[in-house]
Length: 225
Image 1 (cartoon, rainbow, N blue to C red):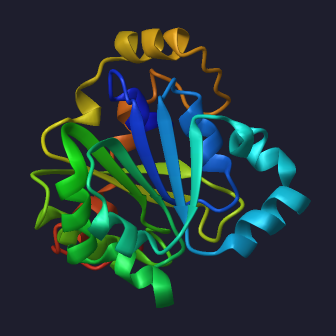
Image 2 (image 1 turned 180 degrees about the horizontal axis):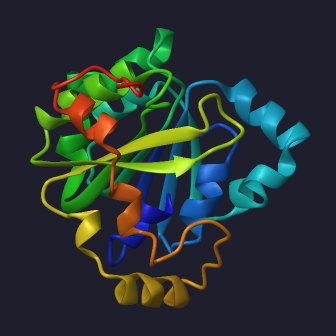
């Protein structure tokens, strides 16, 4: 959430697809948005998470700016008749119902509803364990958006530990924002972080060679030379 929304000077309308546990919604609301719409296909995920994992969402679902919609995100985007400043896809891997969230048709729906200065981000799996899925998503997004970037974070609770995210836009570049601007936006939005830093922001996008080569189709994911 933070690398993308901090790259935007004023994200007012944000759409979250997935994210049933409420954690991403909680972080989106920290950015002073006017409205955050969360579209989750499975109501049981929300119910179980709020009952047994309440600290993840905190009070996000009670925030008057938050709107929970139980629906198919693909269909919702296809029919949406308004523009948003950011779309975040917090989905499972591209298997079963989630496979459509990695399709060109879905990305074109996002492109249509995204404001000209808006930005999309989607989780794209472990580059070590499922690197082919990351490469496919990256190449598909490049067919739709002029600017596509991949960034990394350590997520020890997930298999592979190293996790990837892909952001795309019609022109806004999250790498172009300097640390001073990011620091000021954190202060203005009264956000306190325990992992993300403005100084490390650009480094999130500095990919290791094995990933850069795989994304461009030069070599398959291979760590052993």
